[in-house]
Length: 101
Image (cartoon, rainbow, N blue to C red; front, side, top):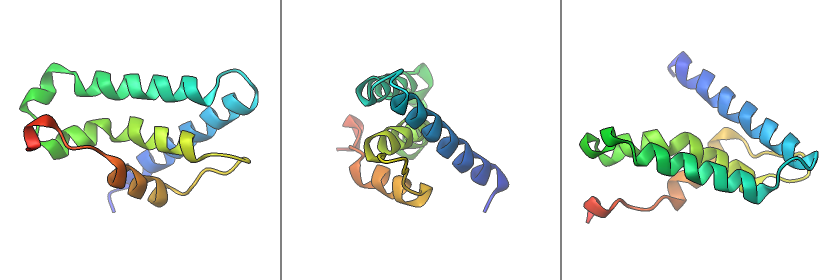
């Protein structure tokens, strides 16, 4: 596996842990985090460059926000599912793009 990919997996889990801590401290709600991540996903997919991207490339651009949203929605009792489970959940729940027919 590419070392950069492993580093990104660790980064996503670190951000998910920080999000969980913010929720536990009452600084933000799960709903606020979910909204922020959905906005990030839409901003990424609304970028002018996505018009020239394949569906797989668009999925790659949206993956971080989707994974963090899955972690946010799956977290509880100081437990965040492992990266592999979160990635699987992202793959199972993603929608097709309008141009995918």
